[in-house]
Image 1: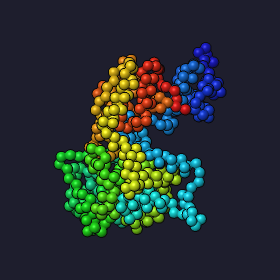
Image 2: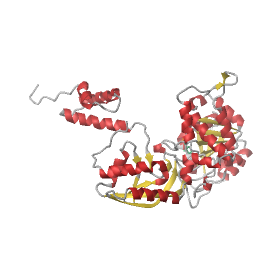
Image 3: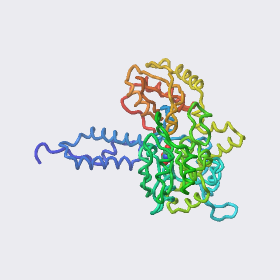
Image 4: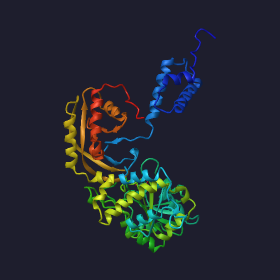
Length: 471
Ligand SMILES: *Cc1c(COP(=O)(O)O)cnc(C)c1O
């Protein structure tokens, strides 16, 4: 070897000893070290970093890894069903149901009176059917799965065309494009109309012997204004009847109650309305406006629902006991409210409670928080905010809200935002109008004290980079 011999790569054990104690499980730490060393060996870098540099690099990687663990956060974005933050928060009854079912055995598929094998989801399905005024109902893993199952089931080799408006070939969130879902299901698109205008006659002209169904997709994450036309569900239903083809509507959000009664937002179509208008099948998500766990619900014609459940593909999409437990508890809250026993119970559903909070309530909370943080090195004020339902719901409606606006004295807006995100209980706000903002509509009142505490810590304790890991 010549004089400039390369620095030796340290052993895994030596690096592990230097990193310990680490909050992540030791096997994970070892894996990160091994991967990093393997990358160093295969890289064509001229010099192996010093031991101290190497430890610092590994610490940074471990920190990134630790932050990717699933953990609670405070949502101060003002987006209620925030897809990146886990969509609908569950109600306390739903959380207790998880607690009751998760650690033990349950009668998931067991009939207690006879001691025989029972029907999975029977109680849940009848609760959904009742709430949606449907003949029957069933549940799968999510809204996308519900749509795929319905399409696959209604499509035959010689009858595979799905008639759909060009204005509804939409993308809903990451990776959910209606055209792709249709093609995955073996369907052929029969696009009708134009992006902004589709008439009943456009649909009529497209129906033929190859038509498998007419599909209407609720344009849930955007809206069009101006020279816009599309037939309502009832006209499409009568057209479908005329030609004896099924009519299916993908509603997306699944509002079981009229949200326009709860908050100053546009009416969101409810499954029961769509069924009353004559739709054969309607599908929607359980974790948007409904406020339950991730699931996809299909309601409608009993004979079709029964067939869907016998489709071998159904087995690949079925939900587990935890989803059933949380959904059952959520739906019981609606049933109790509906039967007039406890209308106030709807407040138990965080999605609905957040929608219902009045501006005065939010303003009072903001005032109390401002009082508690008045001494901090930043300027604070309460401002008007615009919360959104999110999850692709009510794109045209924003909910009047109240935001705490902050301009820190000793750091940038981005630094403040990052420091709050990197805390043991991360807080996610946003930067707008040259302020860092926290929208109080999506912060639970019980979290206000955590906001105060966090702002005090990040604004008074100089930090370099991340806080502690939340382990
Ligand atoms: C959200 C949405 C879906 C997808 O539902 P997931 O539960 O996210 O799978 C499908 N269609 C519409 C119209 C939606 O809004």
